Length: 305
Image (cartoon, rainbow, N blue to C red; front, top):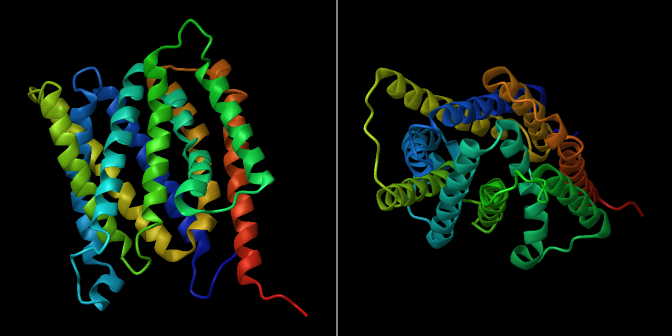
């Protein structure tokens, strides 16, 4: 683990774990609301609440103020594409939460790191060596084991979390194509705004919005927004404290957290589904992250003669 002067790696890791738990808590609320609200509705509500933390993050961005608080993006089409990708990624993930065990759906979405490695070749022109390809292969074997395509319980909806992982990877890759001097909060605000607009259209075309008939549902929708919005803010703060590569390995802590949450709140214990498939996804993803860090050190460390 590397740290630059001024980095607070330990606090950044703690905050990233807090954000992870908040995101998982948001997922629990979404699964709880799924019987009464459609996935497009939940996506629209999530993006609506997501506008507020994105705006707060932008308003407190030093680089944005230092550059004269610009609102225009030269690559606005890329930001729009990222927002659309995120919107459909959310939609597929929320569908999976309503139809699958919580931990199973969540674990499959961790394949996004594997998809990002594969997509980096055609989109970013990166060269991927045998180690990372082997890691991707291991991870996808894990995905197949978790999805159990030959099982009697396999259905088309089982593909939803995998499609979500692919689209989240497209969103992540797209963000790397945007000019590096663009503040992350500004890019995120563009994407969330597009995601909200897209989710509103999808919700309108698939039956509209269900009436909120109880204080309980209103409370849980608000809680979903608070969990998701706070998680975004905490994650942005942690990214400002250290390099993202220092935080990436800890994202896989979400897999055991998802299993514990699914067991504690829904009585789900998908041991046979998640193991060893979930472990292989973790091994593949962590190997990709490790290889990326090795490459970064090789580039930044001067050669001795």
